Length: 69
Image (cartoon, rainbow, N blue to C red; front, side, top):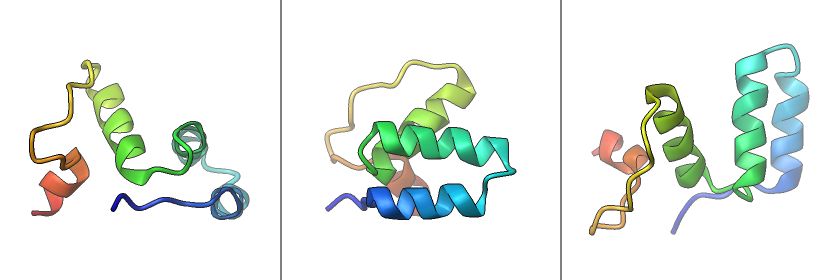
């Protein structure tokens, strides 16, 4: 099961981090991805690397899970 933030949780974090621009960008991506943390992490990772987002690996794990293994 993919971890998900609710719109209320995203708004709470947005208020807490209102003066930190990188957080606002990340929260906008979370909002765009309906709070899906894994999907948002992958998008941010590849955006930073200026690479295309590949298809999900056969294991179904996101890059976030690969980095935690």
